[in-house]
Amino acid sequence: MQSTGSHLIMIAERWRDIMNQEIEIEFKNMLTKAEYNRLKTTLPFENAVAKEQINHYFETENFDLKQQRAALRIREKNGGYTLTLKQPHPEGLLETHAKLTMDEFESWIAGNPVEKENVINQLKQMGIDYHALKYWGELKTNRQEIDYQDTLLVLDHSLYHDTEDYELELEATNRAHGEKIFYQLLTDHEIPERDTDNKIKRFFQARA
Image 1 (spheres, one colour):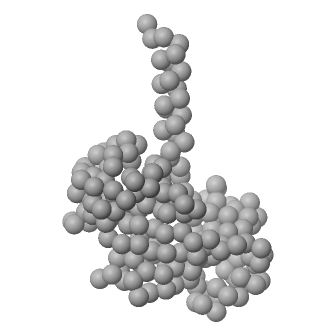
Image 2 (cartoon, rainbow, N blue to C red; image 1 turned 180 degrees about the horizontal axis):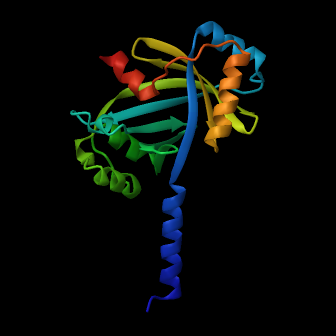
Image 3 (tube, helix red, strand yellow; image 1 turned 30 degrees about the horizontal axis):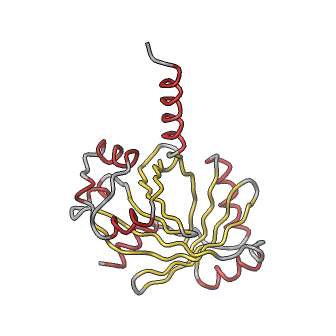
């Protein structure tokens, strides 16, 4: 019979696993520089301090993650490092996270990935050996965020390779609500809907 202590440890481990995963529901649209600057003044971004974050991207030589519409990055932000695997999900994207120390981050960048069980297990289920992952480079973003009608509204100015771009993102906990708010915002500010690839795809396209 399992002891109460062991049972509580198992519950805690399961809870930690749950907390390391989330469903991301987001909408995004590329902006011109003029549209970006206009939204900064017409929406309440004046008190939203721009914060830098750096995405460090990983992929195999054969682009095994891309073939499964997945992506792997380490986000460097506020002095911390978070490893995130993104996978397709019916409601959006399934994100699996793991915190890294600076030494672990540097080991990943140097081509010696440190095993993080929750992320590595997801990769194994995809048939991907984490030892085959290669570091491809970084994308820097200056980001401003505000709460907007029960969603998170984001303005991004990103730099990668010899490219810079501007993007509007909206994150929501409910797809229908987020979609309504996002497209109404585009209409209200006379911004055309544009096909918008995610950052990692834009990164690799610019690298080619």
